Length: 503
Image (cartoon, rainbow, N blue to C red; front, side, top):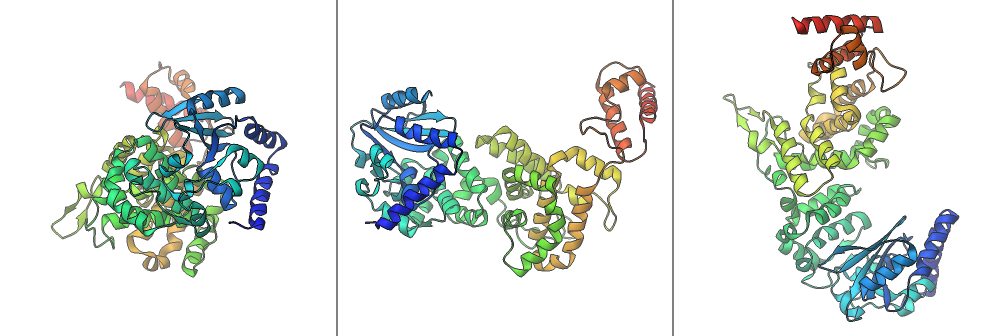
């Protein structure tokens, strides 16, 4: 039995989590808990787990098991001013959406709560307490724990409820790795064995559910570890067969490792380079010092935060086009012509199959398609021209910073940190020149051009059409590079370009 001090601490954590919010939010939390009909209802799953672990709870992310779940969900939703939505017929689960989250309601057709718990995924999620006990803070004495979940919480161990847990719902395979990544749970040996045995079953799960778990793993601080876990459990080849197809695809002498391992290394580096925590090793400190100026820029920080998920995905998949494009020339050199374009297409197909959001797919595709561009923007030893930089920023816009960090992670993964360290400052200075570039002509308004489409049509006396867009692009570039400096020069250029197009 947990000590009284531990119980008091958990209650204090819960009280602190509530009172730290605004009075309006705290009142809403209490109102939700007090308003729920209590007869034949148990709080289950992660809500109980976090309460017993002393973790501050999000009271609007509550799992409930109820006799006649649909009826209870409708009554509770009516009280709370919401409408219940059926999530899945397979498990008969209803969701009550709320402004701060949701309540998920699991049906108990026979009222047997222990039977319901034994069908769940992990022992730490297979505990329950009556709703009235949870509201009063009396979880400990009325806890239903058929498989020793409370003991596993204390040891931070993740065990399966049954040997069939993964087979009955294969998305649990990813959930286990997500728990390990986000919560630091230790996976039990039998769980790991079952994971390897049942990995192929993951493809039986709904793509939307796979993506929901995968996206959280990808955004975890422990992503490098999670990728190794996905690899060793064979889940990675189920999720991304295009990635694991790079095993054994040689790319020497430029790259030190095969295509697959190179991408895994790059993904680990992108986490390290964009991590907000201070580096622990002397080697990483050396890398960070050179990046300090770039990372301290507010716009760069904002872009890296907004692009966190697509940047990590694109870095992991940036060379998946290489296995199909590899050729060896007569001199023994290895080439992968067109691999960036093919890789972008393959990533689009894979992420579409996983039902990833369209915006995320477009962002990943953009980064993969252009991942070579930062290294090709200028001739070796030469600074990039204003024209090249204008075209770079026009094509990439707010993806410029994420793409440059992908370039740095790619470079570190290519040769390794020790060989690159003497040249690292040159690499970061190159990135700084790209990101710090500003066009010669700058409008007071970020959205304004030196001459917009209407101005071009007026100056050149031409109708709307594709020609206007082509002229506008050339005028934008000329203004950015300093070839023209005012509106009158822009109008003259519009007339000249229109006349040349009509000849």
